[in-house]
Image 1: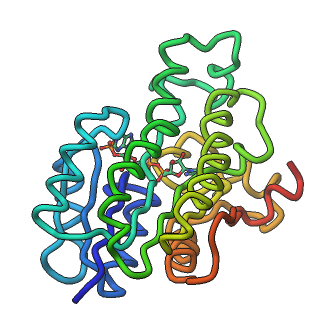
Image 2: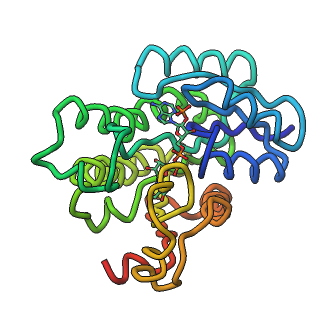
Length: 248
Ligand code: NAP
């Protein structure tokens, strides 16, 4: 029987590439995002049948509970959970990507939106998925952090805090569930070409990234698959950034 993988934030960007790769490897996918049409169109593009699309805002506890109940009832026990739902700009109108997010200019409601989606959202989905994962052989979770959470970045205090929080959360949860043979790891990407980085110029990558370019979602997806399938790795942070953190 094929493994069931839930990808939160699976409709676009990194999560979509992860969904695609897992489907190619024979998993059954539950693709979760707020926009159900986008999740559906991703599901329609996946190899294989029986994949499902669900609309859910991961920052809302009741929606998360309901969504994972639906997944359990319609698809069965979860083998893999990938938390790729995230935001970095609660303000959509942003002239320079990071300047508008200097702490002194950040509104408390925007801080909450970031923390609720990026940090609380992952806690809620892990909590909702775990009951089912405890009954699955070889179950694994990959949370998506960021090099900015490991190194910090001016203009990204709140985003960085949300991603740094994921590191402590991931290591702690890995300890909590290791005895039940569930593994939990964090993947920390650098600059990856998705909607989230649409405002950044490729020249910035040439200058600041040792490998001289932005990454593509498929390169992150490969690393996610590696963590999901590596049966003796838990509580680790894997950086996928073209060497960026070496110079941060
Ligand atoms: P993206 O292209 O903007 O995709 C974000 C995904 O998350 C979409 O599927 C979006 O769908 C979903 N999402 C956002 N808020 C959500 C919510 N409240 N509930 C459910 N789903 C939600 O972003 P990405 O670049 O692929 O980023 C994926 C993850 O990698 C994020 O956690 C991001 O912080 C992290 N990351 C990205 C980069 C990068 O350079 N791209 C670097 C480091 C870390 P809806 O909008 O329909 O909900």
